[in-house]
Image (tube, rainbow, N blue to C red; front, top):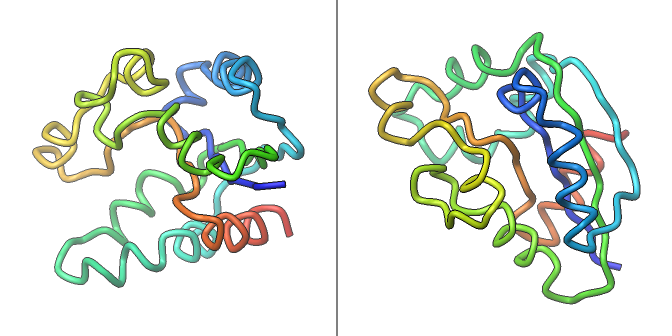
Amino acid sequence: MQRSLILIKPDAMQRGLKKSLMLDFMNQGFLITRERELVVTKELILAHYEDVIKDNPTVPLTEMFLAEYVGQTITAIELSSPNPTFVQDVRTFIGATDPAQADPQSMRGRYGDDSMAASRAERRVVRNLVHASDSDAAASKEIALWFD
């Protein structure tokens, strides 16, 4: 089985989209194997975005991630599928990182209400509903981080 971590981010939780997003994943044929709702700690979010922060040392990402996530409720979901292209299928289904550029049929295209341009202008993280693992290796690392 292939696995992926999905995080339903604070913006989606605050908008009451958790159930709709989970139903969308299930209706797409993805199996929810674990689910956990939790309040995000500084240590957890910095560990999750460690590589992104390291790859962008001149951007104040640490402060933006902390402001957006710490103390907020998220839902971590482990999805699985026997399909070998599962991780990419999930990412295609959720849509482009920038909700303004996402396919209108994708999750971010249907529910998104933010854009990269707006987030940059306001010096904050883009509010794009969900995170999905970008590779099998990332999925293993992220699932261990959020569920162990």
